[in-house]
Length: 291
Length: 291
Image (cartoon, rainbow over all chains, first blue to last red; front, side, top):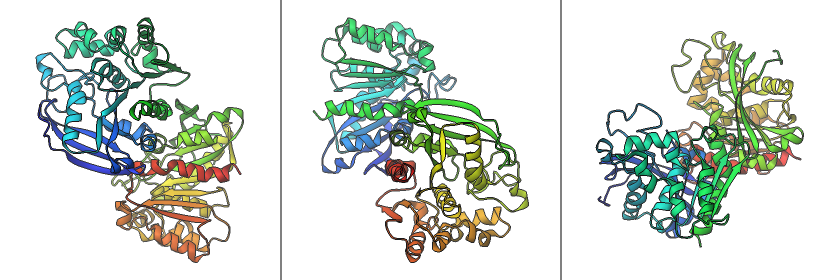
């Protein structure tokens, strides 16, 4: 993978004393396709490198949803933290079936690396988020300190945040999630994605990607915050299973100080829910990013 | 006009300890067409009627843009203020030409009452916002105190907020605007709208709707806050003309305490700009709504 990709700035909006910019580049991890991301730089970045919080969005979303609807930028500006918003999948790979459903293919990369031959050239969102974006952004000279990095996300992106946090070598200082798909190998969305992208299906995913499996074997300190709403229909339908994640965490010896899972009365799966707790999540990560 | 319209609740999302609900009703002011609005009720509304802040959105928008992207709900929840988000025009009137351009007809009601025969049955957003919505919401028994009402808006909705504030009989305690079309009779957007909707065109609009004209003749105390960005292309192209509004206000004797117009360095016309100053505007209105 080359780290010399040329970043093209598509737009720039001043926001909260900083800048929300949209960039495009040819992604090696995504098989040479163009991909977009948004980057919020707080005003503080003009005085030196700032820590980076990565936001992974959910099914059907793009790099815009969190930037526009999350209410993250104001709190991040105050804390002096950058937020990186990747897209949720490659786009335009031209693979048969790619655009047939809203929960698989385009808009549904699941932050894994595909191993089925037809998907493996393009569908490598794990490598894209974990390695490629930091390399490309550092090479471009953006004022970001990737040694201070945390990650959060929503739904499929909550799965991504927890999964990348627990399966990478301490690349992130903390992870949080809104309504994450917490145990995807036991949920319809996860099974469909893993069966579609991975040669070994859910069995292959279990070891590598499933947050509930990963936390049960994790052997170090963690800093994890999860919120989900009691009126979230996807929670009610068994797509999220945060209770499995919580149970596995407690069984593995992680207490409330290390893994906090909060049930939020009456909230649903929407960005109204996310924005309500967005500031709280930014403050959570600031504790570790600014330590 | 009947005030017994039946409100149908289309959706409800818990947000910031309160509720963001979308309603539909058959609007007499809009010629019997169905119209939607969003209403944010803070948690405090469970203990009694709360003041109401009306948000008028800009061209091409709906009742959703401000609710989703304005970052208004959190500050409003803290202040105990409801926010009412009307739509920006009637929809589906079936008038020839209604959907031919993005800045006229559907999505572009300009918060006036049309006087040209082909438009006058449906395009009465002024009556809809000023009279109909308060009547319908009060009749429905929602916990709102319309004696404590203020108004704000963006672009076309900024024009609407200033115009309704200055041309109604103290219905609103304060008005604010992000990048308002401040002198529409001298701007392309305004001229097109007035020529299209009004028999007397811009001449008819001058007396009734143009904020710069209205402030120049206003004879009482006002509470007005306006923000616009120096990198707003519509400002640069002469669509907004906040400098005309400011000049007219000062000539009429309104000082900085009554009419504050702030130039925000580097900001543009987007919701990134709006959300940056949203909290500030909510606090501005809270001063008067809670007095």
